[in-house]
Structure formats: C-alpha cells, structure tokens
Picture 1 (cartoon, helix red, strand yellow):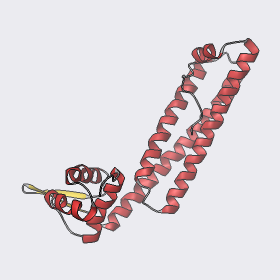
Picture 2 (cartoon, rainbow, N blue to C red; picture 1 turned 90 degrees about the vertical axis):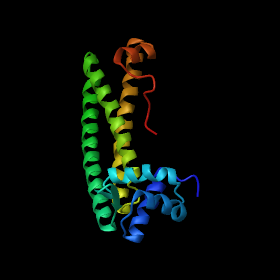
Picture 3 (cartoon, rainbow, N blue to C red; picture 1 turned 60 degrees about the vertical axis):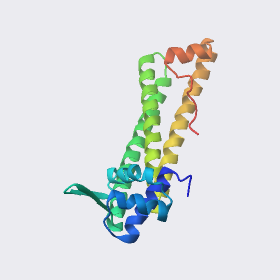
Picture 4 (cartoon, rainbow, N blue to C red; picture 1 turned 60 degrees about the horizontal axis):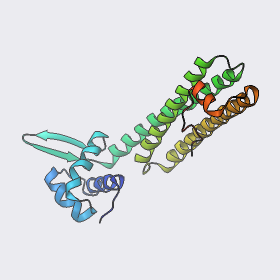
Length: 202
C-alpha cells in the first residue's frame, strides 16, 4: 500500500509486535512490514526508531545485534501515562491563559502601561505555541482511550475559546484607542507590539 501517513505506519508497525508477541531484528521487520502491513522497507527503520523513542517499543543490544519487542499491556500503560502528562500540561495552559486574560482586563484600564501590554502579548503568543504543540502531541495518541481523548479535546476547546475571548479583548482595546485618540490601526499595532498576523485561532 502507498500513501500511508507516518502515524498510520507507526500504528501498523505496532500491530506486528502485538499480533506476533515475538522479538525481531531490524532486518526481520524490513521484510515483514512491507509484505504484511504495506510499510515500505526504507521507512521501517525511521518508524521503528520513533516508536522506541516514545517508549512504545523496547530494544536491547545483545552482542552485535539489536532486538526489538513490544507487548500490548506496556503500550497501554505508556499511552495512559503520556495522556496524563498531557492532561496536566493542558490544565496548566488553561490556568495560564486565565491569568493572561485577567492581566488583559487590567491592561485595558488607563492604557499607560505599554510594557505590561507587550509582556501580555508575548505570553499570549507563547501560550498559542504551546497549545499547538500539545495539540500535535495529542494527535499522536489518538488511538488511545476514546473517553480520555474526548476529555482532552474538550480541554483544548476551552483553551481555544479562552484565547479567542482574549483576542476579542485586544480588538476591543484597539477599537477604543482608535476612537478615543484617533490612532491609525498600524500605529496602534506598532506601539503595542501587536504582530501583523494577530487573529482568532481557527
């Protein structure tokens, strides 16, 4: 088969271990994976290494050879542990976004504290980047417990909604400054360090 995504290759490679409950060398997998799972032999090593790096597959060097194995019980435990870590990180992000939103409300009063506003914008950008990273991590583990994944998606939605409410506040402040002082939009953006691509999260 052709056109498999990297995550599909990872899932199919894991199936080889789970279905056989056997121990393999790389050369064995390079023969089995294309025939049974449609994974090209040239990508077997990369896919296998990613599973080892994530703790999904165990490996051990014995003599001059490397051996690989994985069992369903350990894989489930590893995934649950990773999901717990992601859940904790998401909760931290949500709390930080709440704090940023509160800082934004304070920053709207008076408008003199431009350094504080710049710091809030910088924090907001960092939170967006972290949220995107966590979202990508979640995608890697989407084959896990559907209930846990759904909860994580809800957390993601809450974080996104909070970020977009914060964006509403920024646009409201810009509109207020434009009406109050007659500033041009590009001048407001430059003064307060608002990036050109500042917008709502899709």
